[in-house]
Structure formats: structure tokens, C-alpha cells
Image 1: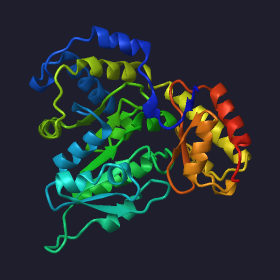
Image 2: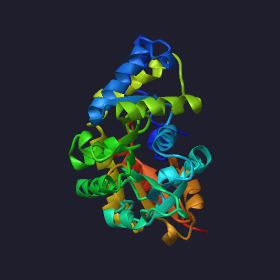
Image 3: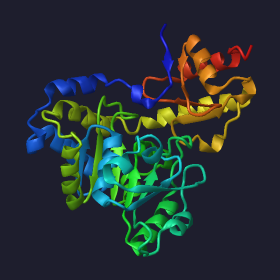
Image 4: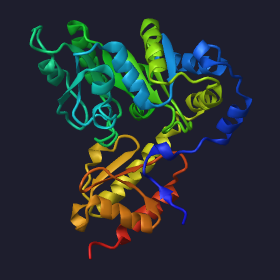
Length: 344
């Protein structure tokens, strides 16, 4: 059976242009700093985000964990949202690798306010950890692909500067946020000291992420990347696909957003519980409790009907639009959802 795969935008395949770029890529040993294609990618990513330097890493998780290692010291505390990827999906990496603890905060649809963060910043007290880093996720995965308003980021930046605490943005889907808000990505990245963004999601590259920041920060991060086993050799063959993604796949993200809104609106009119205000980019999360099925059972029935989705809670199902998913396929998915056998 051929499936319409909406499990994640990580299932995207490299485009023909990317495959050709892999074939043509000039390569060298990146650990020695001699891979020209990796260097080009790192400079391009840094330039697009308005940062001084970039570092090619194997994954978004590696980028986030290298950032925490670079910003903190053992015994510190990292402020983050309660269901953020860096806390929820990275195998307790902050605790294991950096020896820091997470201070998780409630948010409104994945967006932390400066006031909530300020209340969590520790006083100077020998009994308490140092508030060493603020981590934000933009877009927020488990909240449904929601974006940080620029004015909220500006307020957090002002607070961080006053308290002398760096800000890291887990921007796995940062380009989705930029396209959705009609701004260049550097307008978002300007509010952070470091940013990680994925090349292997909506931008369609097969592997990799970039971590960007100051030259001093990236020099430190490069050592931690090596420590974690992320020092790749002739990595230009995959870095080449990231260059293509950044140069040609950003603006088309608007298509994914339009398809997500189309799907979400149809779900709402079909009786599924969904907060349409959260459908800002390419993620659609809805509640299936009215069907009498739990999410895992609902997803299993979808698969039998040719649609792949993910269970992200007892009754919550996630679908993600991406390159290769058309409006016609969304219509097929809607038809499947409307005729899916209920419990019993």
C-alpha cells in the first residue's frame, strides 16, 4: 500500500537538485576544517540568521545539547517550557551531558512570557542553582507549531540582557516561523544568543542541523560537538543538500502551511476537537476522544486506510504537512477521516 505520510516533516526525501549537489560536492576533512562545502553551509546559515558563525551538526538534538554545554556549567539551571523538545524529547540530555537541571514553566500555547520567565529566575543564593540559560522553542512542536510573536521575543531579550542570562532558540522549524510571520529569519534570530535550526525537516535535506551564534560561542561548541562524536569527515556530501534547502526550499514552506490550515478547517467542520488558533505553520494536532478511540487505536485505523499519523497523547493525534504532500492528498485524508470506522 502507498501511504500518505503525515507523521512528520522528517520523512521528506531529498530533491533531485539535492541529489545532484551531493554528487558534485567538493569535500575535505571537516574535523580539520577543510571541507569547503561544510564551510559554505555554515557561513550561509550564519549570514541568513544574522550571526557571526555557524556549526554543522548531525541533528537538532545534538545542536541543542551542544548549545546547553556551551552556555552552562554543572549545577546550573536551564529555564524552558514544560513540553519543549529540549526537555521532553532529548532523553534527559541536559542532565546527563551538561549536569544541569531544567526549570520547566507553563506557557500559553507553547509561548513563554517574559513575566513567567522573570518569576523563575533564581536569586543569588548559596542554596540554589544559577539561572544560566533561557531556552525557547520556535515553532513549538507539542503546542501545534505555534510561533513566538516578535514583541514577546523582544521582551524576553530585554529581560535576559538585564539579568545577564543568554537565550537559546531551539528553532528546529524556525524557517516555518519566519514564513508564517512574513519576516526574514534573522528578525527572529536577533533575539537569541544562539539558534539551532534543522535542515532535515521542511527544508528537505536528508541529514543535519546548524547551530549559529558568536565566533567565540561556536568555537566552544565545536569542541563539544567533537566530544559528542559529531566530528564528521567528508561531510560536504550532506552539507551540500543543506545549501540547496536554504537557497530554494524556504519560501515553499507557505504551501505546507496552507495545506495544514486546509486540513485543520476540515477537521473542525467534521466534528473533531481542534484549536484552530494553534495551526500557524505545518503541524495539526487534534483530539479524537469523541470517536470513542484512543489516539493509538485511531492512528492504527488510519494506517489501514492508507494514512500515517502520530499519537502525541492519550487522545491527541498529530499530522504534519511537508514537501511532497499536495492539496489533493489532503482532500483524500479528509475523506478517510470522515469515513473512518469508529469504536466497535
